[in-house]
Image (cartoon, rainbow, N blue to C red; front, side, top):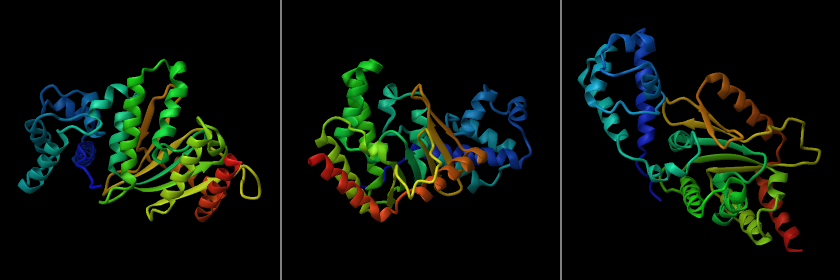
Length: 296
């Protein structure tokens, strides 16, 4: 499957370039706003632009900022204007925004910009690895608790399946390193048939050269003590864009940060659990043993 245009990637790229240009010009966010170079620009808006959360909207506003930062080379200006033009179109998930929890659209944009993702979930099979039946069953089980609608379930299942396409697209597929905790694999979601299909799907994905999956077992000798109690992803972005981390909270909101301290902390978390996990080549046989157990 061919890689699709990714407007949010361009928005993040433009914001990152503008932040770098502002810092190179020796200006703070407050000084840019106080300069009145761009009409109607306030602190929070500029901050959102620099983090890729919001468009500048007009080419005139971008030209004004570039002039303030001392960018006068026509080639450089035209390149940034083209990035802004590409960022103005809609992402494929825009029609699904109403069914997404807080922060999810931002995460989707960062995920679509990633060349490599490291991920762990302590309670469930990682979303990027889920089958449609497993995903749908998860949402159906939580429906009476969360008081969601059938339409909400359908839209979220569609989004998750579209996200998964990044692993198998023909152009620049996403590189994935995932760690799956054994209790999460053994947690029965729906029927044994749903779980067996899920195990078989993971086995199939391990055959991809860009996918590495390890199982973190619950018994010695491999387990070495450290275990994160929450899910997270470390997203390595393309080009000069900063590495980011994503975590979910108890209210289902998604948070994304590119602060070096947080990136370093979650990178250490991932390295710690991969050191305790079984070797990637052991994953298919481990899952095949789970299939045999369910079929007994």
